[in-house]
Image 1: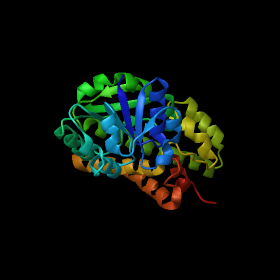
Image 2: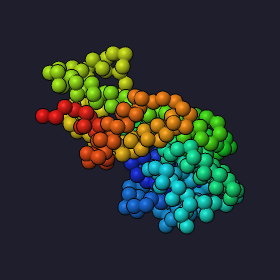
Image 3: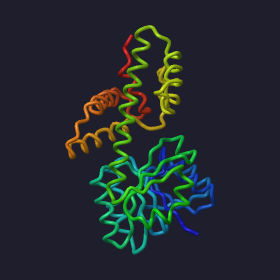
Image 4: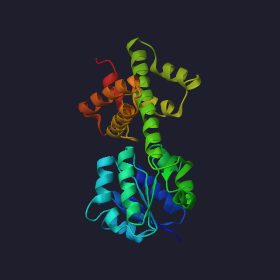
Length: 289
């Protein structure tokens, strides 16, 4: 039986680990805040003392970390992933990072004889819990083929996109569109309210027309009440917008809509909504009393 490792048991990692455990897999976990491991330990996971101990104990180690800085720290710290890699060990990074970060980690893993696959996911808390994520994979094809059963447990679709970096780029493009859509939706909801239209009616029209989408259907009712329960933290969405805009600069692609959405997300973050759901951009777009 394959032993899986999992580094990062937060909003996303928790659901992913629980799905691996539900199907009888052996899973060794580590998280910077050890208390977040309680649910997965209760479900059968084993806790390791360091990230390096995870990769030593596992055949394949997944990572789901918040940003490039944390991904690099976990990889290169004294007790981290790279120092513990040995021949044949596989590291699958599901974190949303930029291409440079992913490439640096991948090169260090392979230099030690290990194998690397980037596999950022499209989806938030509920899809992670329900095993409905979409994996955007690139790097070592042999890992992708081997871990298909695990990806099928945690997700509804897995794509192999080519060489390392393609997964990171695809995820940034997808999240850039998502952040821009959410900001436009928040403006629409706010304009309906400010012009004395029923927000319920607006949501009904949106849900039954050509612009209907699961995100609006899920987020809209809470947004109309000024509530933003966290499924995908706003601080992470703004980070992804920042990285997508940097990618746009690199390839000389103009992104004026994304740039405007990023400014709204930055205002929301500065206003104290960093840990709320990214739909909390509505709180700063909405016309004040």
